[in-house]
Picture 1 (cartoon, rainbow, N blue to C red):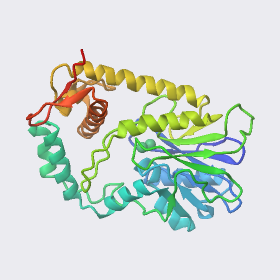
Picture 2 (picture 1 turned 90 degrees about the vertical axis):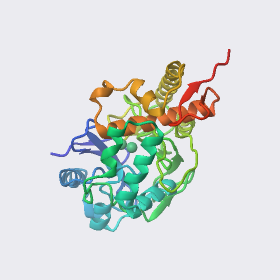
Picture 3 (picture 1 turned 90 degrees about the horizontal axis):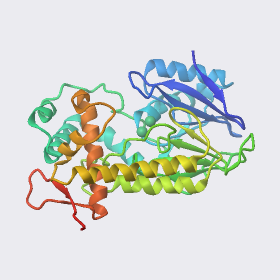
Length: 345
Ligand SMILES: [Zn+2]
Ligand SMILES: [Zn+2]
């Protein structure tokens, strides 16, 4: 049974389940336009999710075959997973920021073994123990894994521009951090219940009411550029805070008001977390050792294999930020490289 919600002003949402995931659901938004309904995100590529989306769209008075276009906040499979199926059923266009489209193209073209070789080298450099790296050298065949053949978008979302949605004013706000091409979409129309503030913001995974999105490195086997995703994320948070939307419509959890105070909470949270990490870095640590000592939602021993890789990537993103701020540095000659807080006394 599909759960749908009418947000007013020609905006509805469908709660599309994510199988075996504590996040539970992706909120797929249905935006009425003069050319037909447009979706913001589509949900996880799974038969159960697909039938909930189809049923939900019927409950919203439309049909999968009637979708005019698909706007994707970022390339992750819980957002972009069903885009290909929607396009097949309807002929809809799919729009995404160029930086995330580049990841989609690479995912489609990169063979799994190349990816595992890259991950093994990366984890070795981060100081992971041999027993963690060994399975990557002899991976089981995973040709059928979801997310390995995502749909190639056919339109580009250009930062700062209005999307081509007849009858609506929806502006793309580039918010890199969670992914390099994450976008929020600002609906520059008065709130249907006249809540104070400027329009409504579809925030994807960038701004969520009760959780902080994962910020790791922008993993790219073909690009050695030293990026600073956490720095990008914090800048992007300030950008959406300044929009002062009357209401935030995120891709998970629930709709909320007062986006600027949620932004302030998250900025304070990250400042606190960085300060805490500096305390841990009183003695030199590899990224792996730092990840082991960081606070997660459960003890390190209970964190499953794949989530440990994500945790190490998050530790590395924090180290990048601290190095960039001049608050930590790599220990010369260490291998694997260790990092230590800079004593500014
Ligand atoms: Zn995401
Ligand atoms: Zn998500």
